[in-house]
Length: 198
Image 1 (spheres, one colour):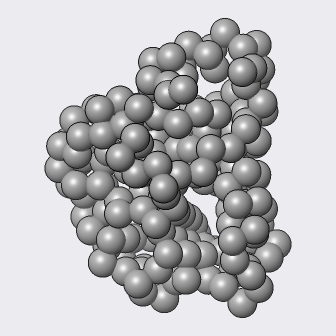
Image 2 (tube, rainbow, N blue to C red; image 1 turned 180 degrees about the vertical axis):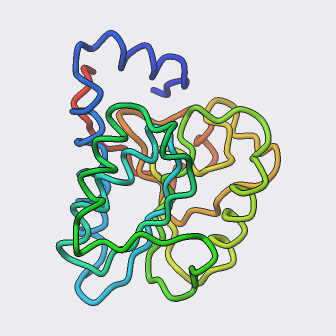
């Protein structure tokens, strides 16, 4: 059974489950999958976030990951555009001494063992803006193991088309159900439960 981005949004809206709870569950699930797959001790992890809900999932995952691994967050979005739930999670890690916030100019993407792509989720439309496009190149050119939350940034969640470029994920942790656009890469996809009704 596959789900479209619109069906996913409708399900989230009609579930009665607060978005903050879904976001917490999503970020925690990403952390759990990484913990199962890797020994996180002594690993360096970079979580790249934008100002949408996908970025909020990334902030949550960083909060859990930083207890086990050296965790940096690269926020490439606009703080003023963070929605309520994502902003709350942004603030939760803002004062966390275990998490270092980076600005784009100072990131050595090759310095990381794992990069988490929490830039764009199912809300993507069309081509990437210049900044995101450049970051996608940086991620793809790095030696790190690449993990995308829900769908790789740049991939259309409904068609699987790539208008411009997308993160070449080694693993996609998709939420609730596999998105139609991930059909061709199912061998790289893990579906995690975030509490939505089946």
